[in-house]
Amino acid sequence: MNNWRLPGSIAAFTILVCLSAALIALLFAAPLPSLTGLLEDAYLHHLIAFSFKQASLSAVIAVGSAIPIARALQRRHFFGKILLLRLASMTLILPVLVAVFGLMTVYGREGWLAMLCHRLGIDYTFSPYGLSGILLAHVFFNLPLATRLLLQALQQIPNEQRQLADQLAIQGWNLFKFLEWPWLKRQLFPAFVLIFMLCFTSFAIVLTLGGGPQATTLELAIYQALSFDYDPGRAALLAIIQLCCCGGLLLCSHWLTPIRAHEVSLRQTWRPKVEGVWARIIDAAAILILVLLLIPPLIAVTTAGIGPQTLAALTDPALWQAVALSLKIAVVAGVLSVSITLMLLWTSREYRRRQQYGWASCLEGSAMLILGVPSIVLATGAFLILNQTIGLSRSPAYLVIIVNTLMALPYASKLLESPMRDLANQYSRLCLSLNLGGWQRLRHIELPTLRQPLLQAFAFASLMSMGDFGVIALFGSQDFQTLPYYLYQQMGAYRTQQAAVTALLLLLLCFLIFILIETLADRNAHHKSTRL
Image 1: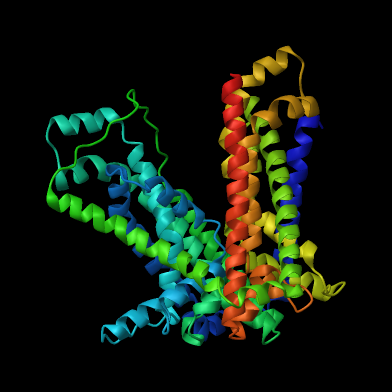
Image 2: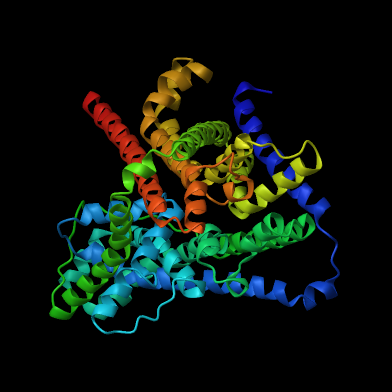
C-alpha cells in the first residue's frame, strides 16, 4: 500500500469500526418485536409523531422567518450589523443549557416578560415547557442559522442581475418573485432538512423543556430507558428506529437536493436601492425580531450571573473540577477531530488527483455518515458494549471524548475540504517539481497555509464538545461532571443563583475560546497576506 493511502484508510477504518460496533451492540441487545406489536404500540407511535411534529414546526418557523430577515440584512446597512451577524454565528456553538437558562429567565413564568406583563396588567399565559418551549428554544438556535444560509444565497446573486433589475425599476413583490426567489428556493430545502435533522435529534432542549410524556422524543425516550427504567433492549430498539429515521431523512435530502451551479459576478459590489416607507418598516421589523430573539437571553445570562452570590459560587471546588474536565475533553476531542479530518481529506485529495473519484467519495462520505447517527445512539451502543464486557468505568472520559470527536467530524470536514482542495490545485505541481511529499509537505506547505481553517475547525469541534450535554447525560455522575452536567444538576435542584453563575462562566469560556482562536486565525491570515 502506498503511503498516501495509509492516513485516510486508518481514519475511515476507525470511524467504521466505532459505528459498526455501536450498531452491532444495538442489534444484539434489541428485542425482536413483531410487526403487529410495533403497529399496536401507541406510545411508540406518539414518540415518532411528536419527534416529527416538533422538528417540522421548528424548521418551518425558522426557515419561514429567516426569509424576510435575510432580505433585510442583505438590503440594509446599519451600525452593529457585523456584530449581529457574529452573534448569529455564535449560536452554532452556544451551549444548549446556557441558552435554555437565558430563555427561562426572559420567557419563564417568573421571567422578565412575565413581570412586564404583570406591571401592565396583562395576563401572561405563555408556558416555557412542553411544545411551546421546545419550539422557542429551537427557533432561538436555528433561526440565525437559517438566516445566514439564506443571506449567503442572496449574496450569490450576480450583481449584473441586480443592476438590470434596478435599471428596469423592478421593485417590491416583483423583485422578490423574479430575482430573489429563484436563488432563495435553491437553499430553502437544504436549510429546512438541516434544521429538521438538528431538531429531530435534539436532546438537551427536550430534556429540560419537555412537558412530560406528552412532549417526549425518541432521543429522550432512549435516555429514559437507560437511566430510569434500565431497559437496554427497549433503548436499543428505540435507537434503531431513530437511526432508521435519520438515515431515511439523509437519503431523501441527498436525492431531492439539486446540484447547484455557482455563477461568478464581474462586479465587486452592488447595493440595491430600496425605496418606500413600507419596505423600510418591514425590514426594520424583521431585523428587530432577530435582535429581540438573540440579545435578551444573552443579557439575562450575564446579569443573572453577576451578583452577591457570584463570589461564593466561584469558590466551589466542584465548579472548577467541572471546568477542568470540560476543557480537557474539549481540547482532546478538538485535536482528534481535526487530525482525523486531515487524514481523511489528505488521502481523498490524492485519490482525486489520480482521478479515482469513487474512492475519494467513499472517504469523504465516511465522515458524513455520522450525521445519520445521533450522539445518543452512539452513546447507547457504547453503553451496551461496556455493560456486557468490562463494565462501566467511574470516569468514562475516553468514551465521551470518542463520541464527541466523531460527532464533530462532519463539521470539521466541511470547514477543511475546500481549503485543502484549493491548496492542492495551487501547490501540487510545485511539490512534485521539488519532490516534496509526505511529512515534509505536510510540515512545510500544508500546516502553515491551512493554519486559519485548522484553527477554525479546532474551535468549532472543541466548543461543540464543551457545550455537549447529550453524551454526558448518559455517563455523568457525581464523580464525573462536566460544566454542562454540573449546570443541569444545579437547575434540577432549583439552585438558581449558583446555576446563574455556572451558566455565565460557561458562556464566557466559550466566548473567550472562540474570540481567541478567531483572533489567532485572523492574525495568521493578515501575516500571510503581508508576506505575499
